[in-house]
Length: 340
Image (cartoon, rainbow, N blue to C red; front, side, top):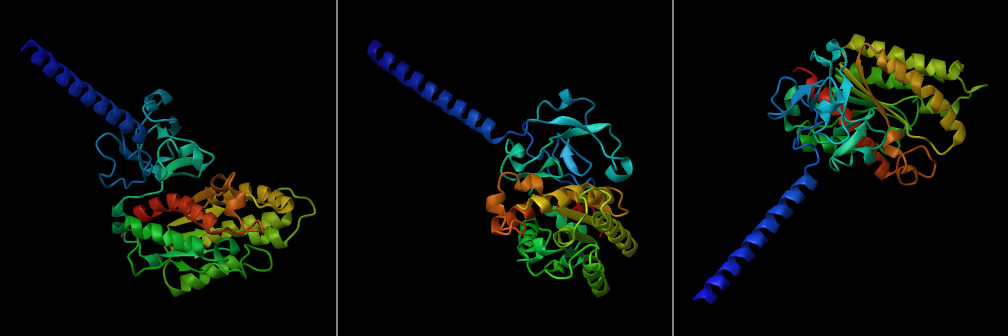
């Protein structure tokens, strides 16, 4: 009898150990799969008027996060710091700061999951809420303009449309209007090709959101006696971008997503883009239309041989998909925040 009791006790102990090991494995696996401090909504785009951030987070400046005044408040989120909030007229929420994660490349966001990308220097989820279709922005309201980086294959637009359909922002039968072109695609040199793309589209119907690039064709064809911020080629390109933003504002465009180029392989071209970039970014920051800047260098960093064609300036299919992912991360908030 005693022997049977001992055997029963051993069996019970064995089952308890197995159960404990299983629970431990489950908890460890959960910790590995949930690196956002227990909050699956962290850094996902949101609509301030919708309850899209769960019970622990708030929609601040268009992203699910927590208000903060010092970085220690953000300790439960990996690599997060307390970032100053944008001005109230842009952000719409009076707060001193909110938890955010800075980045220079998509790999910096890998602590969360594969759906997070580096967009405009911060980590953002590339998957938006299905409710963005309620914004009232139809596919025909979204316009793509730009040069060969977009127009060589139009793949970036196709990838963006797929992402929009998956999120519910675009119905199966809708398309974005893509007027980007391999010809007539400069900001200022030899005419105003990108502005012409826009005005042609605006004459066809109203535009609410513009996805664009620009300046690459100018520096590819034009030259500077000295590559410096006062080079007329670069000054005129940046001035044309600012003028185009003014025109768009007058027409009622509400958001612009401006994607600037990754580093090309040609050193001379890269030097001109390095000087033009801050000039156009400054025009974007001062735009009367809400302008969302996407620096594709962070997306392409370390992957240029895979993401760029042999010419070193246009994206491969992999580069087009990576570009679309970065642009989509910046595009989701404009799609959600425009009132019907």
